[in-house]
Length: 397
Image 1 (cartoon, rainbow, N blue to C red):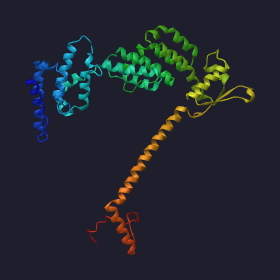
Image 2 (cartoon, rainbow, N blue to C red; image 1 turned 135 degrees about the vertical axis):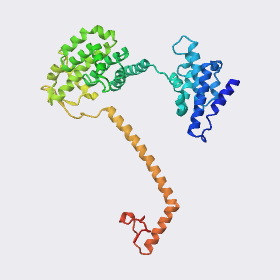
Image 3 (cartoon, rainbow, N blue to C red; image 1 turned 90 degrees about the horizontal axis):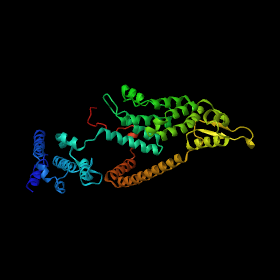
Image 4 (cartoon, rainbow, N blue to C red; image 1 turned 30 degrees about the vertical axis):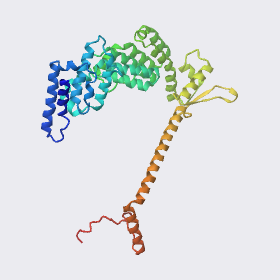
């Protein structure tokens, strides 16, 4: 109990520092940090590491230094007593996890600057875990087919600064990033500008089958694309990317149709099927595929059927969507609803402000003065009439 009282007393010296000079405040913080470091070096704090209520005596905002040192000792003690990489009480909703979250929300950033070493130890983040977080996040977005968000997460991984080598996590992210780029944009995208050239060369050498697949995709040769997919089948399976590669093959038709739309104003469905769809595709399947692309918003075009179904069906490409997508209409309705609520709130505040303004003494006096000017026959000049009401009347004539 004596040690706890000493800890509370030592931390209390930093509570009332408003009357101190910056130099005295600096000395007091340094003395407090030195005191707790001495206790840590002598293992004195270990005697109270098992006291789960000890941190209840300290406020993480006012006693940031004491809270940091005690929390750090309790975390170290918990890690030493288990063979698990992450003890149970350090996992989300665990006792120490909750303490750490509370501290990170309220700590005094001025005081913590003097305990930088202990601070780094508390919030230490392994770079590989950081990369895996974004890699796994990208994989979640892949499952949802949100390619843009997935690409962003993968770019965080592949653009991570490195000195000479890249980790396997970064290489894995690069392989998936190439495939996601084909799915989203139909081409091999350029890496983020902050990625150093030698890192890009390492990626390309370690992911050569993926680069070859991307180049073949861009050339628009379906038979060659299938040959590349079959030739590197073991690579896709080993990297657990077979599912993505299969989606790339299916996306080839969609991007080919879109590319044709940039070249031609209109095509018959039969001609389009020959250039962009598998050879065995029937007319009905081709029309259904094109219709699904139009309805999904991936293709801006209109299917034109001839009268009495005599003659070929035409596909006319347009610069704008043939009709708004349902998701766009829903988003617009939500946006309009939000704007309406904002305007209603603004009008309520405006009416209230006008009411208070009309009852204010200044406004009543202004109205009374204005009426006096009108009754006396004077011209009621204002700033809008070109007369400066704030003119310096004490100036020289």
